[in-house]
Image (tube, rainbow, N blue to C red; front, top):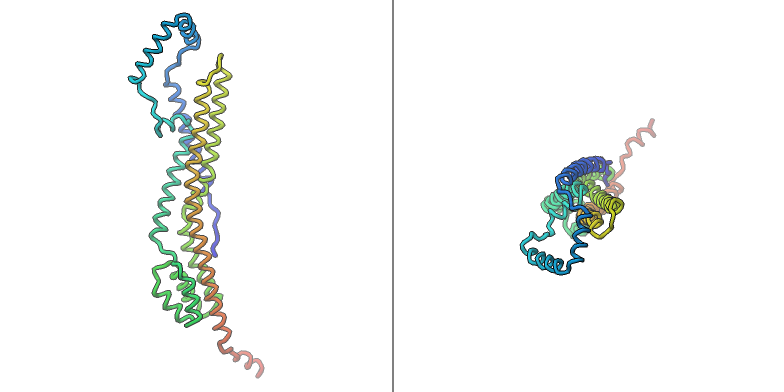
Length: 296
């Protein structure tokens, strides 16, 4: 019924997300430079050896640390802290989520305030064609002209001049206008639902690279050395899926509504097309041209 024109949304979104990824990468570098240098491992080992030699001091230190813990600021897992721990790949995911949910809510608004059809429309048209022909269809369309399907069929009937082929062409031309409006933004949702998980997986690879790099440069390996890299990998993976899943759900929902509307228009237009064929076939034939040729 309508043609899907090729879009450049994938290229535009990829360039946009790449740009914000670069900004996030530069921001993370500045934050890393501003962080205080951690305590040397030699000093840590020295403190541990001293604590082992003096068990009483170790017990006192543990008791003091236990008493100081309530006074210290607890590490609260918030969206901001998770965003910062996710690394630079969280920036393109943030932009993708803003674009995706903005388009989704805009489309929800559009489909809520534009009435496409009603459940019994097809059956009513079919019954009217059998009972009263096109006359009943005209009156029915005028009665329910608030629906988009009525406007499309009305346009096709007005330009048809009782010609079945002209009716189909008129319906297709009018339907393409409404389908273009209904599908606005859907290619962007499809692109985001595809690109967001890939960005998350890219963040996973980046986090694992950081974890193995920390292992390679450390003299002694412990869980804290690789924890930051693994945390970054898991956060970006989760963030990519969190962005992609609802956006994909919205895309499938909107696309399904458009496809169902298109199928209903084709079915109803086919019923009217058959009625026009019946009328045109039963109409008296114009034999003036044949007679004129025969006399000549």
